[in-house]
Image (tube, rainbow, N blue to C red; front, side, top):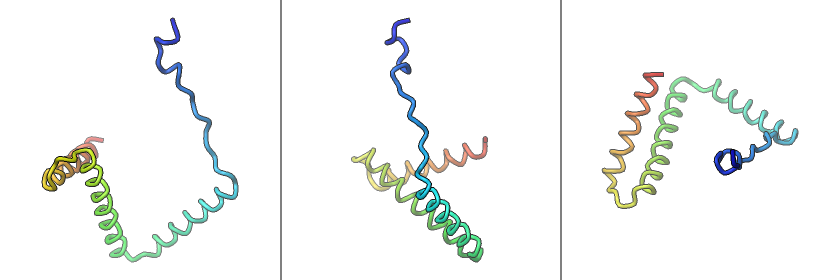
Length: 95
């Protein structure tokens, strides 16, 4: 089999990445602090944080939709977002 017949043969597998020990300790400590802060939050604050996170994700997704569809109106972009959210819900229900 000639090498060109298998396009994957040209791909290199990247070496697994592990940050330096100092960096990993910092990552672990920051994560630990986030977990402790989350555990200390009142339930209503957790609910608000979840809502803010969802709204932020929607704004970022809308920006991507606008970038992909520069001629679309704001309403069309919001409709694409709604369709994506419906699809996501369906995927979650079937898995």
